[in-house]
Image 1: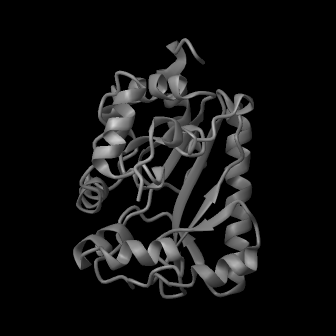
Image 2: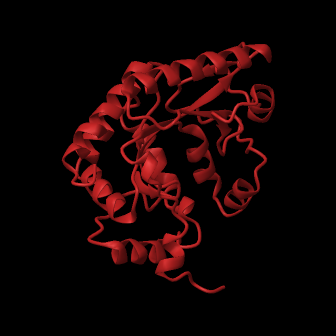
Length: 257
């Protein structure tokens, strides 16, 4: 297979001017049954809710809701609240609930969502890594940018504050992060001096063909965003908005935003 050149690699990222300066949130949660045990019924839940704001994760015990891109923190808060209401209503119809559990018990079900990409990942994953990946949930914050140059600048600003952001979003005394590191050996976001650096890291770490295979805690996403994956789970929408606000403050000095 031919190695993508720089132009081909960058074409995989969908930067859009209209989303510049917008924020979006992805929030992972577990499905639990009446006995408070994790339930691998994500496929059933998603078929019932039929809402593009909701999607699946590797573990069939998890679902994820997403907010619409917005520059207004109040809009993000209301979007999170609306998603929770819809998700709880749907889960209740099948005898389940939603749980913001940052780290699940090691005896949880290890059912994998029936997705072809996840099947390939699991095929080459050790039992230890599969368990680590299945046990954790997090909250990801996206920052919209309109070019790769903007993405690199925002990315570098956030990586400088990664320790503070991790501490801010930690509810498991560091256990979620330790499990994440078990799954993703290349978790630490490197410094990019320029676009060539970004390409070289992608070549070295094997995500030239698919940017989704980059597992850095802060990464440049194929969606045309800088994605901050450092935060854990919370039932409080207000706390998530605080995280978004902290990111907004950090990148406030960017010449692009």
